Length: 373
Image 1 (spheres, rainbow, N blue to C red):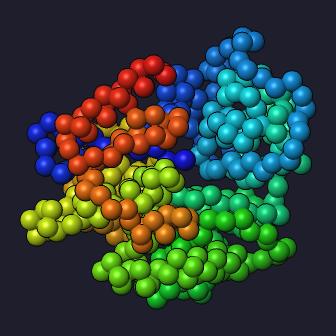
Image 2 (image 1 turned 90 degrees about the vertical axis):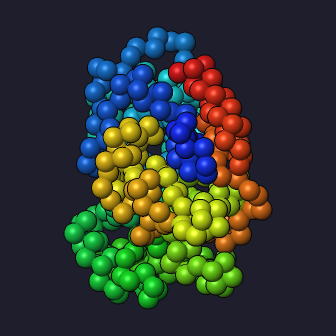
């Protein structure tokens, strides 16, 4: 789930409010001192995970129903715990972290898909995650919103194909990209589950992903909708990627409307407006930071810095799913220029075109953070 918010400096009361996304696990990452994952292994300073005692909620059994868990490149141990909790594998992130603290092999958990069970005790979940036989390599599951470099890492983890071979195939013009993509696969490696055949080449694997994107594009009538809205199909894919990065699925169409309102030349006196999205700067930095500093916002010299450059970024910033593509083509009706996720846990997001109301939503978010840190 993507949580988001917009912020604006007091001196910028016109519809130029920069946007700022907040995820509920930010406080967890900071307070637990979990280090970011490096390379393919999840690096964790085990001694930095605090001892939670025995009060954290925990299941008592060895598991119930099968479920596939995806560990993405860059996931921390805390993020893995949040995924496990969201899928019903463990009862709480704290119980997972407590069990992981005593298992040095937790640091060896690599990106990929894991055959897990629901309702496992945290200890049983840790033991199963570190068991090499649990990691699945015959299927490839790509979630929505992955950058191309993250997608290629997951393909490597599932197939053993090298990044260099995958990058060469992605740039080779032989994977079925539309002509308007100009041989840039970013945005077109469609998120879905793929059953891979043995010995598939890098070109064959990537062709599968682009073929699935083509099916989704036909389903949502991408080219027809782009023409109706006055954008090229490529720009529609850029907008869809922004919707995917910024929005909660239930609000995709409203986030799309905010993007169009901010791009509206009439709103800005005859020129494209500034989107001011942290997500585009994260793309330039190849990061997933939640609280970008003012220095990063102002000093990141990149065409993807939408605080400094008006209009859309030059390419998609991730691979959007079909729902985000559909929302980009069918935005909701509304005057909104700002939005704030006031409850990152539930994803509740409030939209407005009034600056003072926007400030009130920011205070709601601040109150939520103060209570949940």
